Length: 132
Image (tube, rainbow, N blue to C red):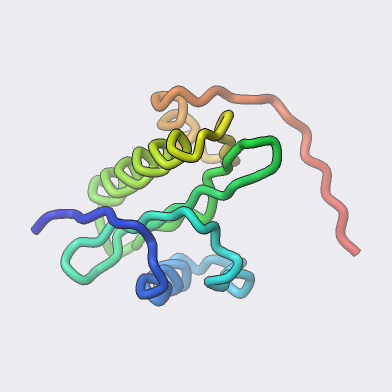
């Protein structure tokens, strides 16, 4: 069987929720089809989702890689390949959309290393938060 990476559509929404639930994602309650970025891809093997990821348009003509999730029931090599295909598709979408650049946020060193291989660079930052 072959991994298919396709544009994320509403029919894939249940698959996304299932992967988020399987990953015990604490912010799953904040996800709805309406809050997801409009640009997204999902990788599927047979009828089973492997991974999904999105590109959110942000101000200034930039994009942000967003809402990535993988299926914990697949091995790390298959998940890595699926994420690679999704990221490549999202980078092409950013070109088509004529985005000035793309940002991504992660503390995971493996993700940071893979992003650097794609041409991303690290921007030192301080994050401030405020909640009422």
